Length: 350
Image (cartoon, rainbow, N blue to C red):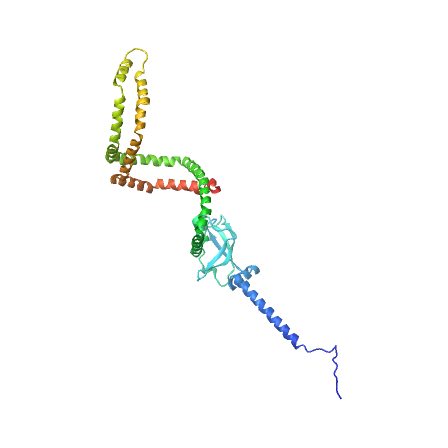
């Protein structure tokens, strides 16, 4: 006799398998949650930052009173701590900064500063607080935006780019550079002239100071020796040739009788001046034009010889060096460059 068992649809089934699936799902959910927490903690900079954020959110951070020079810090400024490894972590912020009451015993004006300190592991009483201010200079901006590691990366990128396609970059960049210079130079010239007008008392004072020193004590002795001997050696042959031709063309008789006539009480004077003007226009100018090339060569040789003379080079080199080191000159150059290239709105727009 065979016994047949019929399952009751209402009877409970074996639930071991669903329990295993539920346990696996729970473990996965817990693992994902832990991974998410770990990722969030890493993004926030570690548990110390998370703890500081929690203290700030719950309002359980410390209140640290301090005093500072007027206007040194303002509300909302962050407070950082430099870790032993050189990294920085924010440990608080400036909650308020108000001028000290006039009834205070302090003879110097100060600000009452309140800090909100988040990091419970770090005692603010053991820390030296230093305020850092950004002065807005281009050098400081470059230093902040481009530390040494980043400068090396930029340098490598530029080197690789020019190695691979330097000619193409140059062909594309040069027209832009030429256009920028062409547009900038007239504006820079206008701004420089305007700056010179604004600083006229300063450069006139420098001019008066150096007039006696430069001209009388340095250049005049050079003019006597060796500049004049050099000029005479180079120019004298050409000038003598021109002088002989002019003398040959001049009519001594024409000048003589006109001068005698002008010295008499007779009317129609100025005959000598008229003859001189005719002589210059019709005789002297053509002679000078005919020898213009000879004069140019002689003048050029004179300039070259003067520039090569050791005595001239020594005197002028010392003069330029002294002029460049003069405090007033340096101040003038600094003011002109700042007003022309840095503070000029027109140059910045171009």
